[in-house]
Length: 218
Image 1 (cartoon, rainbow, N blue to C red):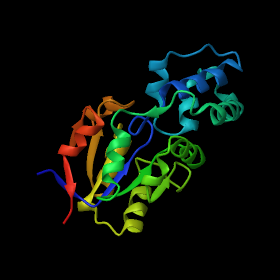
Image 2 (cartoon, rainbow, N blue to C red):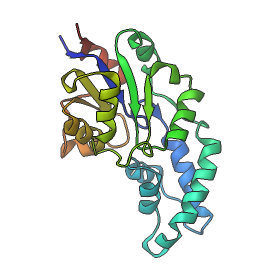
Image 3 (cartoon, one colour):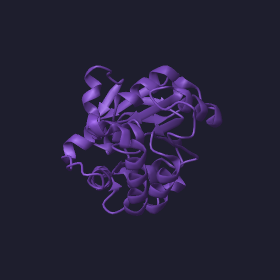
Image 4 (cartoon, rainbow, N blue to C red):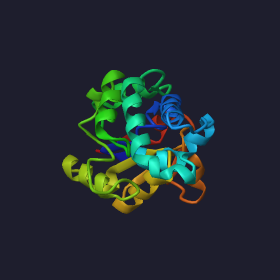
């Protein structure tokens, strides 16, 4: 029958959109501006998930970590202008959101900054599907803390037991657990390796597989 849901909350990078190349390009441009060699795409992907500051702190060699504020400024300046160069929704995302728009309330909760999140959603014509969009700078604490998810539940008037948190990393699973919601891990994203230690309630290998795993609450 599938999980009976009223509210679906999605992560952004690695869940709704494939943004890894634009993120990696921005990281390497920022690093290169300070004489740091570029990192492979797979390495940058492994650093994504906790916001830009954490991403760049991991990317910088220890002897240059004091340059973090300047590297962050360079990263943000470049990424703002290039965040839609190659970033696109994953296959099946647009069709699914279109079909679900009258069936569920939907929201986005990401650790990416809110302004860039909104720019991506608007640029890809996805913004109209969500009643609320929150970023890593929307609350005092980011995922895996459940603060943001609990706020969205309250705004939606939804119970934890009728809410599904969908994401590609352990941060999404832990936020969902902390808020008492069901959790779905997408294995095609950037941080699925974390599911071994923090398994979600169920996983999907492709976004459209969610159709068979959920149904509207009565």
